[in-house]
Image (cartoon, rainbow, N blue to C red; front, side, top):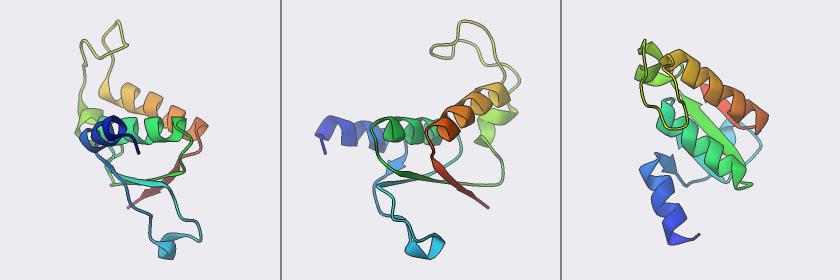
Length: 104
């Protein structure tokens, strides 16, 4: 793996290890732990690179940011949005990219 990609993945909250076969018969290239924007970004970018991704999340879909009423100056978003809207958009992209999602 290219060192810059590894560093970017590490900063984004991406952990590179195969998922436990006990969870499924499939082994993934990447397992991501965390349901906030960093976790969702990591799953999206890994899937876009053509890697199979397992995303492990908690009970609060979207993490703390999903409770945020107003997000200003979010990269790529010219207007204010809510945290739940941001996470909904990220979830839609993850589903489109066929990310395997596991939650509590």
